[in-house]
Image 1 (cartoon, rainbow, N blue to C red):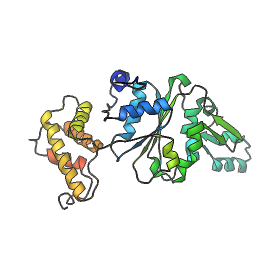
Image 2: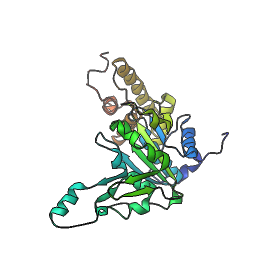
Image 3: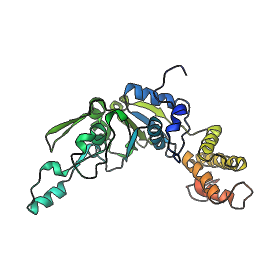
Image 4: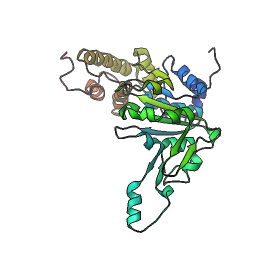
Amino acid sequence: MSYTPIFNPATQASARPEGASPYVYEPGLELAVNVALAARRPLLLRGAPGAGKSSLALNVALCLERNYDEEVITSRTQAQDLLYRFDVVRRLADVQAGARRDDAHYVEPGILWRALNASSAQQLGTGVPAQPAPDQGLVVLLDEIDKADPDVPNDLLVVLDQRWFFVRELGRRVEAQPGIDLFLIITTNGERDLPSAFVRRCVVFEIHAPDRPRMKKIAQAHFPGAPEALLEGILDVHEELTRDAKGAQLRPPSTAETIDAVRSCLALGITDTQAAEWRTVVEAAMWKHASRARGAA
């Protein structure tokens, strides 16, 4: 290695708690994580569903021994939801009931407020989890940002760049705590293009579908000691289904679905390809299209 890494999963993996899922890094991904950490920029991960984008964030947090938080973006998510929510309905109900409370009572800090300034977040809302000291660090995952309205990424530009935002209902500005070590990981399935101004503020990496040797290495990392014949058979089926899916212009089996196939076989006591139901089990885990679509292309 010709640079001094901030993040090195090979040496930091011992920090991973027993039972936590392993992660097999494809070439270039470890470097992308280090560049994002060094530049203090978000890491934007592109790739198909099930490629391992979301699980990377937790693995990085475990290896670096940082606290971890995540939020899955939906079509209803607004940029302000990631900063805070103001409960207008509860405020109206209290007013109608004659209960007058300060507006701060109705502010619920969101994931980015908790990440940037945990101490102020804990003074508001309900159920705000305790956060680590700033020098302990934090990894935050914003999962599937392409599901949100196109304006959402643009509305986060000031937060990403300058690490502050304004709470209109309280008339106050929230700034990042001094010394906060926040690593933001954002994923996209590519369902819509993201604004160039948003992408420019990120370090970008695309996670590709693994080739057969890396897929086998991933399976072995998840299931040490899994029978060789079973793994080879599942990989044969994976390649066959991938060819059929691409020929029919369908989504091929993902890495996660292939891991599900191995897990299902082992849990059901199938240890080799001689078992009567082994292929049926494998296809059930990996093939998500109409039963006769495969091979029809």
